[in-house]
Image (cartoon, rainbow, N blue to C red; front, top):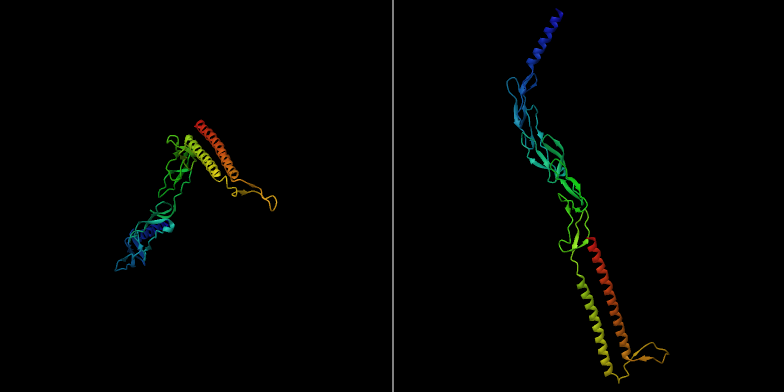
Length: 284
């Protein structure tokens, strides 16, 4: 009998609790089950025995995205550019602002369907290529170039080094993984030889012309012995003098010497260029 009484008491208590619970879209306050306010609204007055809940729309820059019993709405989120964010969808009375990463950024922290923090995509270094382009959710993935290829860091694939010979040019600087080969025009050896020989002949002809001119001038002034150039004085009152023609012979000899040096230098340069060209052909 005692056990039966206890069971009846517990059953009655459960029945009362279940019977007194408010519906799913209601909330209990002061012993009354009041209707919740719809999304986009908040409670202004709670219900009474005679009246229902009074709801009002959320003020500007606030929202409420679910049925509620709150007396205020939530403030709208701000998409701060300093956090790498921009507005994807503007805040409404019934939905919060949706933020997304700025161009060139990817999201690292999310809340529901909105981004809360984003960082800039990594940049590939020279000698690397973009293996996988960054998205709003993932960072850029870089790969390394192999020997014989190069990338400035922005290529989606490493490019092979240029072939200067195919373009009729000469390799000036070899390529690396971060830079291409530098090509330039090679001056043919015959042109170099022609320039050097032409300059040498020009200097030689100039020297001969000076020689002839001064011989002609010497003959015209043979009778005039007063025009002389003085060398180093020996005593204080006596000078050792020499004719003008000897001075000019000295100038002429110097020019001949310069011409000989130019010719010798030309031969040396020609040999060096031929040797360099032979080495380049052998290497290719």
